[in-house]
Image (cartoon, rainbow, N blue to C red; front, side, top):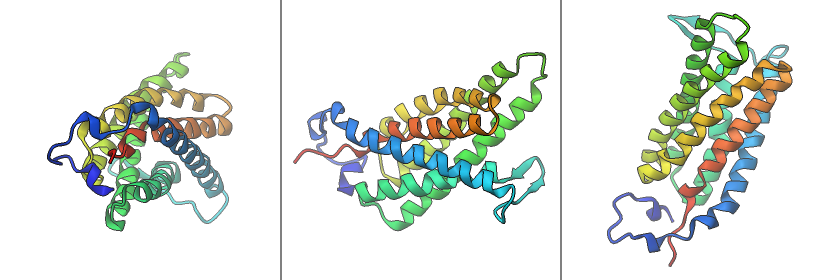
Length: 209
């Protein structure tokens, strides 16, 4: 099946792919996996406050914190495992996806953090979360999309089209973190990762044979 993802496959036409509506089952599965990833990520972050999972390293403007690390790695592990199962990529590429997801989210976190901290709180904190979340979503989804293109040997329009659009728009969900504190961030991670996960479904279109 992996050959179906080769960008340069000779003779490939639109007829080689199943209809877009057939992406729905994979979209649902990936959304569920993404939601589980988001919930597990926040569980690890929350548990790190009182357990042995806490770490705090800062220097040169870079922050290595549970909230900056766990979501990306957990998403990469769960979604990467599913992608490997469906595409047949090697374990090395699957591990690469985990690392790419971790780095992409790490970058997105820093974008959001510095934008939020650069906007003064004049009663517009809600808007600040949106302003910070959207570019963060763009940076994270763009970086992971670039990595996905090469790791899964996917066409650029599949790896960086819908996923980047959804990742960017869903970044606005960061506004949920401005409400209900813990539960707001839980909702953010669950919904954001579920939405982005679902957007990866076109990557799994199999060639009709």
